[in-house]
Length: 355
Ligand code: AOF
Ligand code: ZN
Image (cartoon, rainbow, N blue to C red; front, top):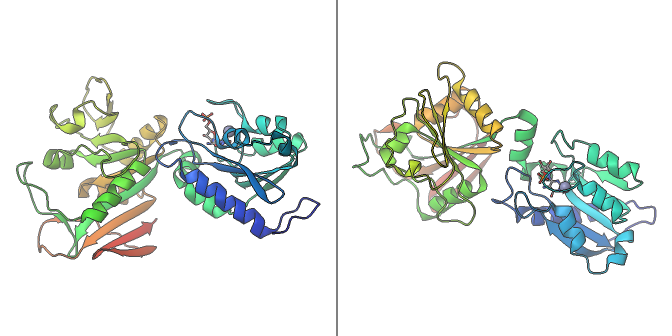
């Protein structure tokens, strides 16, 4: 590992420490949204002397956590701070990290990628440089953006990141044809893929289903087989058909119902009246953006999934295919695309698509 006196660091060294930042950042998964996951390390003479990450929405950012973890404070003046996202320059829930870096006397900062949040967007770097801090931007940039793909789409496109998710049989059906909750749904997932679905719920800030799915399955849409927060529940219930005694309306979690009827809000349940006649998918995404929701997992059923696909409003799709055939039933959506990755999980195919 080689660090020159002029302050230029070899590429491997920068990437090594940035990898550590990304590892740390990921520890905040499921708890920081709609903020980004961010990790930071302080390095002095090729040794990590401090580490930190953003633990929870509303709490300290990665940089103060890393700086406060340093025991030998006198070393800060000779250290390099690595951080996966540009340090903030604004007063949000916490004071600007750029100011703290300057006042701590840290002479050099290596940044993974710029912050797309218009309140920051280059101003953090400017603040550091104006104070005489040496700044390098763009180390493992693609990885840093990928880790916070939800945050980047949310900030840059002013809408939540949209993930489609469904399970189907080998011959393309999501379920048998059913009329109500008295008939149990077809079990397509196995234990492992069911757990993966709960992991996806914990990783996203909201989960969306249509009224038909609610009426047929009475789902609770909570995270059960994984750690992390349960997502905000969202139902599209144009005619306001979901009965009050259904799990989704039990008021135990923040819930949003999109409908064309006038309905009074209740504790933790918001009824949002929208026009379903044109661009309803875009309207819904804009309403979620306004509520600071940075990602939405669309879990079904086929009508809702197809409306997102037809509107072109999605970012990725995860499709599970079980090795069974049922010959007839509720048709799954179809994507005219090649998957980006393919896995086999105990005999079930798991296809991952990007739009
Ligand atoms: C950083 N380090 O670890 C994170 C940053 O409401 P606040 O004060 O928590 O500010 C949230 C914004 O700060 C968020 O939208 C993003 O632009 C930035 N996140 N910045 O310097 C961090 N998590
Ligand atoms: Zn900050």
